[in-house]
Length: 125
Image 1 (cartoon, one colour):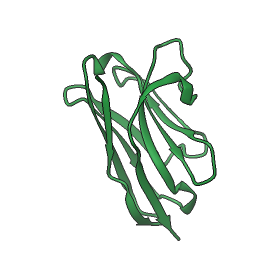
Image 2 (image 1 turned 135 degrees about the horizontal axis):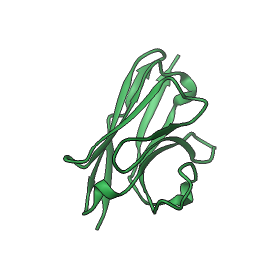
Image 3 (image 1 turned 30 degrees about the vertical axis):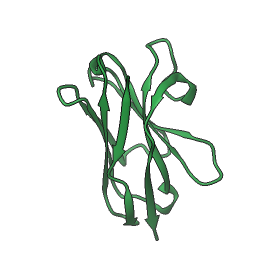
Image 4 (image 1 turned 120 degrees about the vertical axis):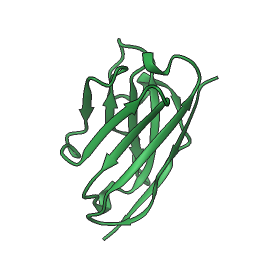
């Protein structure tokens, strides 16, 4: 059974930094790429960041590029998302997820088979 648990969300002010973490359980974490998505109220879930299984490649949403760093620790089965200079439009629930396989696009929610419960990020102006 694979479980993903996000943490690190909260209420922050515009311009602050925030680090989200995702702890996973289950075997073979190091063989799967991982992603972060977010969902704002009334909007669809959108791609934020992706990291390859060995951590050697990353992708970021164009709208957030330059403010994010995704990283992973395969020894600890964790994947983190560092967010800098947050803005009010970064508000939403942030989810980590495990990608199904290498043939799936990194930026589509249906490419991922396991999801965490999400962590709320609220950015005040």
